[in-house]
Image 1 (cartoon, rainbow, N blue to C red):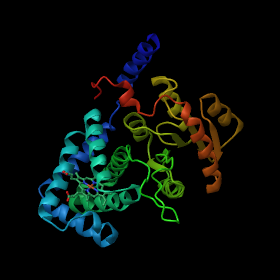
Image 2: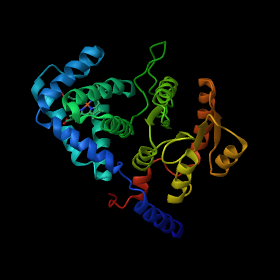
Image 3: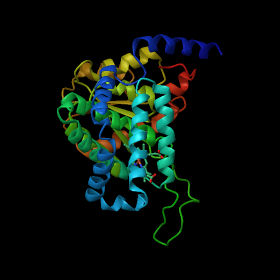
Amino acid sequence: MELQAQEKHVLENARRKIPPGLPPSNIYRIQRSFRMVASQGEKMASRFYDLLLERSPELQKFFHPGNLSQQHAKFFNGLHSLMLHLEHPQALRAALVQLGEQHQGYGIEIQHYPPVVDTLLQVLTEFSGEGMDGETYDAWANFLHLVRAIMLENLGPDVSAEDENGMSHSTMIAEKPKRILLIDDDHQLLDLYQSYLEIQGYLCSQVSDVAWAFTHLLMSHYDVVLTDFQMPLMNGIQLRKNLDYMGKGLWPPFILVTGSLNQEIRKQALESGFVAVLKKPHDLTELGSIIRIAVKKSWAFPGNEGYLNRAGDGKVG
Ligand code: HEM
C-alpha cells in the first residue's frame, strides 16, 4: 500500500514535468491543417477511398458498396472527433481503443494499416496545400503511428488461421504479437527495422523524435523499446534516465543501438538499465536475436497496461 502511494507520488511529480499527451507543438500543427481541409470533408473522404482502393484493391472486401456518401461522412466525422480529443490523452486513448475494437470486428489486421496510413497522409497533403509543411507532415505521420499503435492494442491472436491440414488453430495456445517501439531519427532505418520485425510477427511502432517516444510510452504500452543513441534533444541513455526519473521499474526492457559504441557508452547504458547494446552496422538477424532476448525479459515488468492506465485516476490531461 505504501509502495503504491509512493509510486503514485513519483508519477504525479513526473506528470508535471513531461506532459503525458501529444507534443503540444504537434497538436497545434495537426489541428490547424485539419481545419484547412474541414470545409472539403466529403470530397477529401471520397478521394481517400478512391485512392486507397486503387492502390490496394484487396481492401475492397471490407467496404460494403452501400451508401458511399454516408460512409465518407462517418469517416470524416470520426477524424473530426479525434481532433477534438488531441489535448486530452485519456479521452483520445479511450476513443482509439474503441475504434480499434470496432475495426477488429471488421476483420482488419496489422498488415492492412500501412496502406491506409500512407493514403491518408497523401490525401491530407493534397487537400492542405501549403498548410502541409515538413513539420506538419511529420506531426501527422507520428500521430498516425500512435493511432495505429493504440487501435491495435487489443488485437487478439489469429485464431482463424488454419494449418496445412485445414485444422483450425483456435485450440492452440496463441499469443498476442509482442509490441516493439522503435526510436531513431533515420526514417529509412526505422522502415527497414519495422518491415523486418513485422515479418517476424512483432507489432512495431516507429517514432522519429524523443518527444513522440515519451508520448508512445505514456499513452500506449510496449514489450521492448529499441532506441538510437545519438538523437536531437536528448540521447537514448538520457531518454531512459528521464523515464526512470518518472518511475523506476515501470518501463519495458530497452535496447540501445549506436554507431559510436565505446566502453564508456556501453558502461553507461548497462548502468542505466539497458538490457543490451547493439553496434551499427549490424545485420537484421542480429537485431532479431537481440529482440528475442529482450522480449523474454519483458515478462518481469509490471502489467502491460501502460502508464496512463497505471496512473489511473482519470485526471491526466
Ligand atoms: C489510421 C487508422 C485508421 C483510422 C484513424 C480509421 C478511422 C475510421 C473511422 C473514424 C471510421 C468511422 C467509424 C464510425 O463512425 O463508425 C472508420 C470506419 C471504417 N474503417 Fe477505418 N480507420 C483506420 C484504419 C482502417 C484500416 C486499416 C482499414 C482496413 C481496410 C479500415 C477500414 C474501415 C472500414 C471497413 C470502416 C467501416 C466503414 C462503414 O461503416 O461502412 N480502417 N475508420
